[in-house]
Length: 254
Image (cartoon, rainbow, N blue to C red; front, side, top):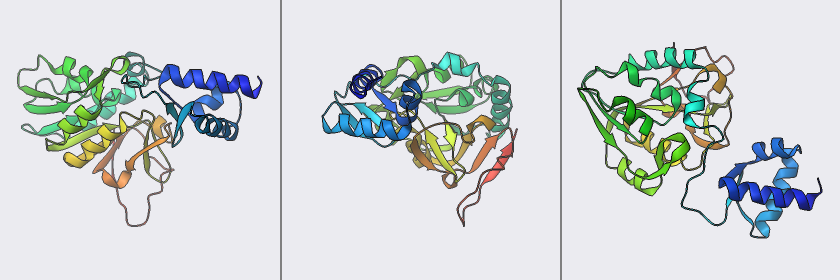
């Protein structure tokens, strides 16, 4: 493929999806990440795309949030045994009467069947969580309104972030798309990152739920460092993890 053809194809991809990472484009167009970065710089200089860290976004700024490459229902079925074990371990950290926040990830959502008979207040931007707990007799649900991301059943945007700043929770349970060896927690969806950061800001304690495939996993957007979390809940000891000096982390194995 000629460079001009590739530029047109990249621009079409970004317009169609709203955003794209360097890694995704590199795989899709079978060229190096360095080549994709140069392509994106040229397209950005021409005003065709908007360059962001790790990729590019559509300059039109469509109100519709970006779609995930795989929808919630598809992701929920992968690694389900590990997710169930992690969910069970995480649910054991909750006391009756707690106010908790549940993130939009599929591993976090796997906690819901374990909570239906508990007495809790649940704060969430996940419609999957709302659906799973709607009939729970002793659970009050606080839904963070916002813009719907249909294929991941989540609410995002300024309304979600504003609502989140008005609450305080005892514990937040957060998912991730990847964790680097230096302890950087990553995500691959730009509109979800502010919500995840907000969960950390309003919680007394925070638990990161991640199976062994998330080391290093994927993602190009930094959410936080592992030091912001009270504990990591996972199914295997992350031997490759090296935290910065002075940082410590409790690891809860499922």
